[in-house]
Length: 194
Image (cartoon, rainbow, N blue to C red; front, side, top):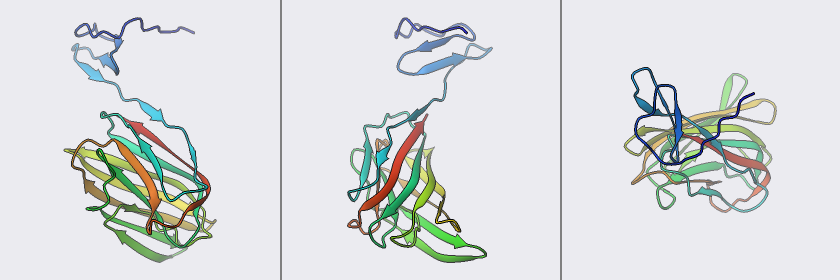
């Protein structure tokens, strides 16, 4: 097995075809010696969702193009639903166009909509959510979301939304639709990529 050691973080022009360099980012070149940033995936540290009304991931880098929020066995103390908010400098709490549904068998048990965040319909305090929400930029600070998850053994959750931020995304907040119910089980993490 070979090991690649990067000995400098100084950008020294366009590298030769096939070379990789590091200058805060990874780059590669194609046969035309065109340099392009290589996509990388960074996983944050999982946070126990066992207390509090919100979980924040801040200080995210400006090169992010996609964020995945992951839920494992997450539940709330009351009848609110999970709500994911993003922001640039501060959390954006309005201007979303978002909806989420819960489905069991052949029929929906309900549809929610929200203008305060990307909403997931978990339909009650006893329901334990596992799954993920993917939030992707179209450019110009426009972000769209889609989610797929489950609670109990027979219900599926899905939905989506969009928001235009006033600047470059640098934070993600996982909270609740009423802002007062607390997390009481499970864990939450994010992955992000450029």
